[in-house]
Length: 195
Image (cartoon, rainbow, N blue to C red; front, top):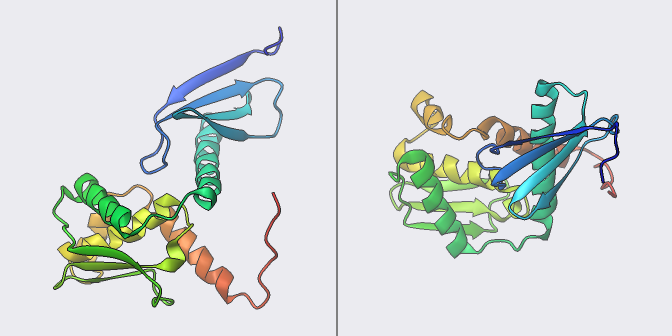
């Protein structure tokens, strides 16, 4: 319900690629002072922000809230099996590499505890660590793309990284994975937050 004197402004936009949402609606509220919240409404995401927030802050908070929703949803989603993982690899190859990366097999493995994924180009096989299960979709997508890129370019030279530059969440996913590694190295991991 909107009260007189408390105008709300609403804008709609397309989400960042790989966010999982199909449309974003940002609702500004004069009553909202400091808090930002978001929820899914059908096939769109609604982000509620203070009316006085700048466009740059809005953009940053939309990204933060999309990531937060994705993380919450990934905890409740069923872990995709090998078949779904192979289908996702095919979709990502089509979207980012014009379908040129064609793995013969893509599967989860439980024997990779020091790396997130591996690729054997001669066999066309890609293996992802089970430790990725439950992580946000954009992180799993990044690791899949990383391994798909190895089917096209061996090693980690400039040409390899140029391929991965096509994925807009490369840096964010790398940062997420680096954070997971850093947290694993802490002598006394912080207690899990109760939201």
